[in-house]
Image 1: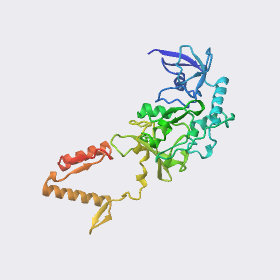
Image 2: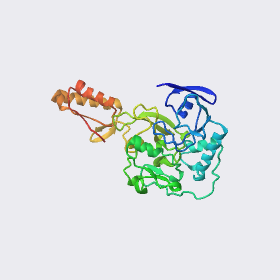
Image 3: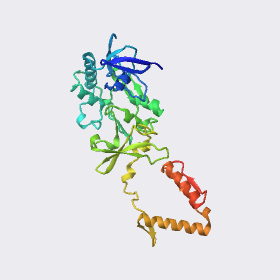
Image 4: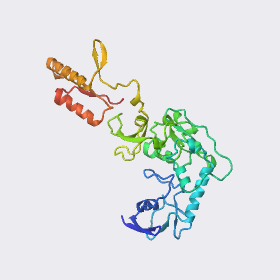
Length: 352
């Protein structure tokens, strides 16, 4: 593939043929705002906030869908570009709730960040506003379509990454919105509640129900860990506040799953602080379970296994592995059964 050289803000940039202006600008270190663009999804060129000025072109070009060309000269922050972005933000904010101070997405909202960057305090256009009921009739996700900017990221991630196509655009013009079939709710659809739509949403239109009002993004420490629900090995971040896990968020550096997770990995973390969870080994003495140290418990297990093996042989012992263990743990358990105990009596629950 041939390389193409162009100028961005007066600086020569060389990129492979087929590269978009947005990608070329990012390579050169120039920041262009985006709302509908996502590097892992298709490119609709819908929001237009990424427009740039191309010398000789009749109109401003959407940088996320415009490929570079030899000799092209691009300005990413000229006066016409800045004015166009301000106008787009003005239009979006004119039909957007002004509750940023209490919105759970504050601190991570792209719309709020760009409004601050470009000095757009509020929408100036008067007229009708869409007023939709907040959808919270499922256990996991809250949908506030009043805050939706119709970027379409949730639609594309559900179709292109998850493969379920639960939601799409409905209606026309001012009444356009994102919804499941027949304008139903997620609870009434075939949504698997993986939360991928929440991950890509740039505003507060989609939020996690269980964490609403519990913390701000800057109040939590992110601790990368491995999901315990199956052996795939997905990674994500535990959100920790005051030494307590208050939520889970995807980690883009995850080798296996990237930014996307399943419903159990995303929302099934409450067992961590469950009052029913065992935190210390228990040994039965005189018919009652009592707390013991790990050394005491492991010595007892080793002693009992040795007694059974000596009296009845290795095949009198069976071991059950777990889908909640990592592949590495299950591999070691298999080695323990076959090489240490000397039995092939090891089985595995396929799914929990």
